[in-house]
Image 1: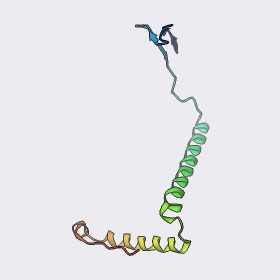
Image 2: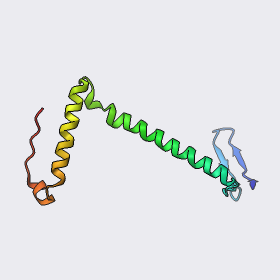
Image 3: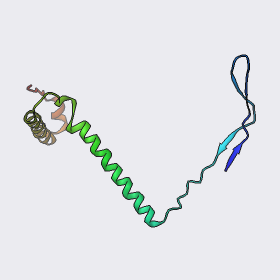
Image 4: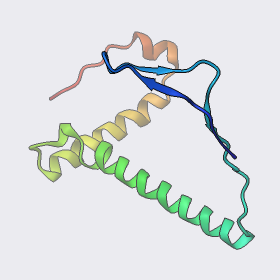
Length: 108
């Protein structure tokens, strides 16, 4: 449904737009789905594919090709990642009260 009742006047001296009170334009869209079950399934498959692509792009940007990796060899990056995984596994076992009071030193 479309209603076109907005009245706009433009001042010749200032080029200012003035909207007349009590007038408006609006559109009402029908958002109900008219797809068949097959089209619905195809749409869901496409959405899942898009999610996977976005996830891969995010992984490349944040994990695979991160800023801290710049200038490091593949072996250095792998070593750092392995050390982080070991650290993560050991800190999962430490209770929160001990973790908060522990001093952590990192070797560079």
